[in-house]
Amino acid sequence: MASSTPYTVRWGIMATGWIAEMFSKDLLTNPATRDVHDVRHEIVAVASSSAKERADEFITKIDGPSTAKTYGSYHELVADPDVDIVYIATPHSHHFQNAMLALEAGKNVLCEKALTVTASQARKLVDKAREKNLFFMEAVWTRYFPISIKVRELLASGAIGNVYRAVADLSFNNDAPEGKVTFKDSHRMVNIDLAGGALLDLGIYSLTWVFQALYHVQPEKKKESPKVAAAINKYHTGADETTSIIVQFPKHRSQGVALTSLRIGTDVDGHNSGGPAIRIQGSGGEIQVMGPAYRPLQYKVIKKDGGGQVEVVDCPIPKDPTRDWGHGMFWEADECARCLRDGKKESETLPWSESIVIMEVMEEALRQGGVEYPELIATDVFDAQSSLNTGKR
Ligand SMILES: NC(=O)C1=CN([C@@H]2O[C@H](COP(=O)(O)OP(=O)(O)OC[C@H]3O[C@@H](n4cnc5c(N)ncnc54)[C@H](OP(=O)(O)O)[C@@H]3O)[C@@H](O)[C@H]2O)C=CC1
Ligand SMILES: O=C1OC[C@@H](O)[C@H](O)[C@H]1O
Image 1 (cartoon, rainbow, N blue to C red):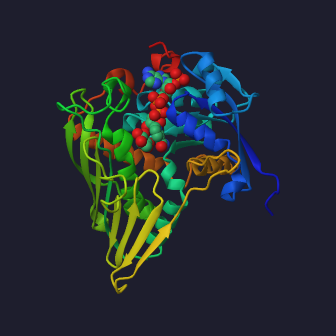
Image 2 (image 1 turned 180 degrees about the vertical axis):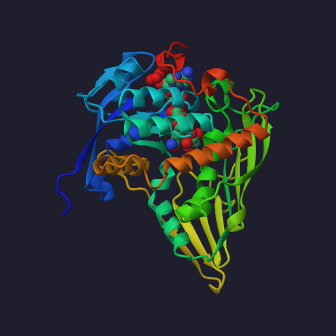
């Protein structure tokens, strides 16, 4: 029989930027407001690589607990004995070194997407987690949404027959005059030194849907790494600005198309007039998911023999009324808590092997498009004193 006392996870937050704020505010919501009663979350420490004061300000900004310890370095955070799991919210460039720093220190890790810059880095992190017997997960929050769970269930149950194709897009219109985009060259979205680019930041969600539809739902023995064909337009910084990938799963006769761009928007007018962001097509029908691909709130099921009837299902994200907050990242946090409680080292919803295959696809696409990242961020050699860990910029 399940215990009536919820299992508590004590989080350490690494970095104090935008997504760290979103995630931390979600951790602070009351789980009961999403009908979760078996796990709960505490923020026990926050670290900024630049200054302890930034971590102090962060706690104020999120209306966090005054008991949380604040650090001016990532090294101090991973050494804190009260931290059960470290949430890594730094740019892509930093993930390998930061995650390895935490794993080496014996900490469980939830690391923001994209997991790493290269597939080799991802494999090394998984090897380290295995060696140290630690929990490790890529923070692809969308996978833990009830809408994703429902769509996977529908696909697995054969609701649309044999699934042969998935087309997914996550693009934003950041077009600007004279060939520019609206981001400054130094911004993490386009800065090659921070592993910027549409694919690692946005295209990973398009691939997430392609993989949820065509790969994840396959029985383990039938899973196959896809063939990859990619077209990439590079921005003047060297990062990719528009990337289109076709993945082909020959044994399953299925194909996925993953699209991303910083030039045109999936949602043309901000009202979803452009139609679904994701189309999953099977022999017996189609499932459409309304975007954005990272935070979808509605899906439709269209049956081949449905006589024109379309099932439309809304999947809203619950808010904690006390804090007036609910972004949707709490579901992945709940998954981490349950895995820690149950002694699991990886999440079945995004197993290590799947994160690695997706990193391999992105690496191959970037190779075909001629995108190259600097050695400092592409190396798979861990260095605790790397500037990516010490913050000495
Ligand atoms: N799941 C989701 O919905 C989203 C995920 N993300 C992911 O989260 C990660 C961070 O994105 P986001 O929060 O938007 O980025 P921000 O630029 O807002 O924050 C990044 C933080 O990383 C730390 N950092 C350390 N070194 C550097 C450096 N050289 N340059 C910039 N920042 C540095 C800083 O914190 P400090 O100084 O305190 O150490 C900074 O505040 C990315 O991997 C991104 O893909 C982003 C947005 C949404
Ligand atoms: O993960 C993300 O989802 C939302 C986007 O706006 C953001 O750039 C990206 O990092």
